[in-house]
Image 1 (cartoon, rainbow, N blue to C red):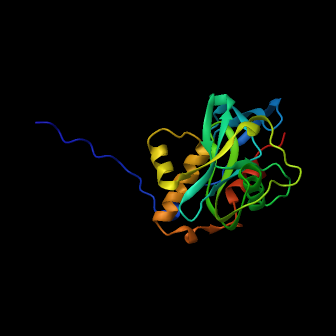
Image 2 (tube, rainbow, N blue to C red):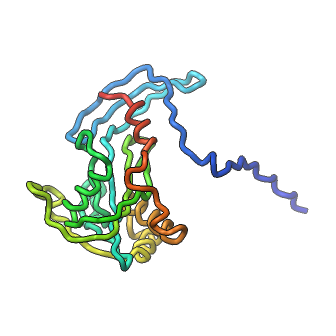
Image 3 (tube, helix red, strand yellow):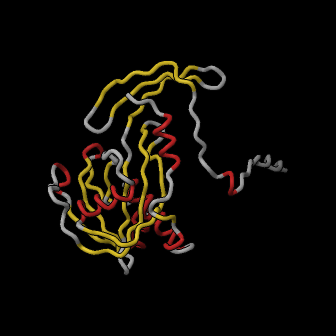
Length: 230
């Protein structure tokens, strides 16, 4: 007879414990390896709680916002943009850097929506936040949901350049985008987070159940407070 399999030991945590906790291990050495126009590359020597010494290299990033702008027929405004590091033209939601000192997150999102796809919105909500690649990149991203859309001209003085000069605006249904994500045809992390969060919000409590646009963002504030400034 075959012996019964060993039961899997499971540490089950409840809803109140499902939260990422700020923590910072001791840093004994730090070096700036390279400084770019937007990001920088750093190396730090970190001590684990039991004294093991680790050397970690990572990219510093100012953070970003992204926008799922959805109309009354559940169609989402998107851009098709060339991304050289991955050698693909990706379908993405409008997004941009948090590179204006003191600018509120929702104001940055409103600016990017107007610049990239020529839209304004009357209703703004927070969809989700993420650290986009926390093993090697200190980028925090907040995704907004924008509704009540209208067309607006580009902000005064704004001119698209570089890759942005070659991108176009397209629209796609929310359900079709979910199919594209789950089918492995869409790869932008901004789109994946935004689309799946929007779909979950729509099918669970509705968009009006989302957090307000000015909701606190404690994970980003902790990141900015704790990380080394080079």
